[in-house]
Amino acid sequence: MAIAKGRAPDKVRAAVRHGRGLANTFYTSTVPGAPNPYSVTMQMREDGSVVVQAGGCDIGQGSNTVIATIAAEALGVDVDQVTVYSADTGSATYDFGTVSSRQTFAGGNAVLLAAEQVRKVLFNTAEKQLKVPAERLVLKPGFIVDSATPETCLPIPAAAALSLYVFRELPSDSATFYPKNTPPDENMQGQPIASF
Image (cartoon, rainbow, N blue to C red):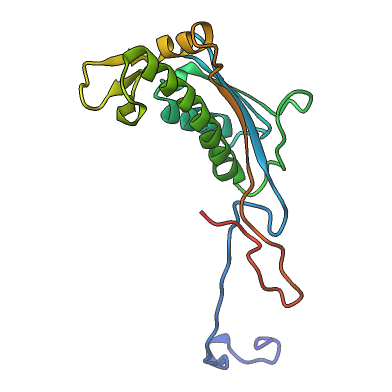
C-alpha cells in the first residue's frame, strides 16, 4: 500500500502497539469427559511366556511394544517372552479407541492390574513350593526370590507350570482400567481429563 501511494517502503512506520496476552494449550491422554476404559486379558503359560489380548489398536505408535514392555517388567520376564494380540474386535477385550496417546496410560494401567493377579498366583505357588512366607518373596528377572535368603528361588517358568499342573491355579486375569474423569458441569467445571 505504501508503494501504491508513491512512498518508499522504508519511510513507512508501522504502528507499534504493546499489550499483554495469555496463551495455553493442553494435550490429553484420554477423551475429555468420556468414560474411556481399556481392557486386557493376560495369561502366563507353563513355559513362562505371556500372552496379552488388548483391545487397543497399534497404528504405528508402538502401543503393542509398550504393552509388552509393561507386562514383562511387571512379571519379571524378558520382553521377547510377551506376545500382544490387539485390535481383534471379534475376540479382544474392550477399548474405547486409539486416540489421544491413551494406549500407554490407560492400556498400561490395565496391564498392571492384570499382572498383579498373575503375580499373586505365582507367589502363592512359590510360597508353597519354597515353604517361604509370601511377604518375603520378591520378583527378580526370571525368578521369584526369597528376600531373606536369595539363594532360595524358583524360576518363573517353573512357578507357572506348578501353578497350572500341581496347584491348579491358572496364572491369568482380565482387567479394565477406567481413567478417572468427570464431564464438565453446566459451569464447565469438573475433571474432564484424567491425569497421570
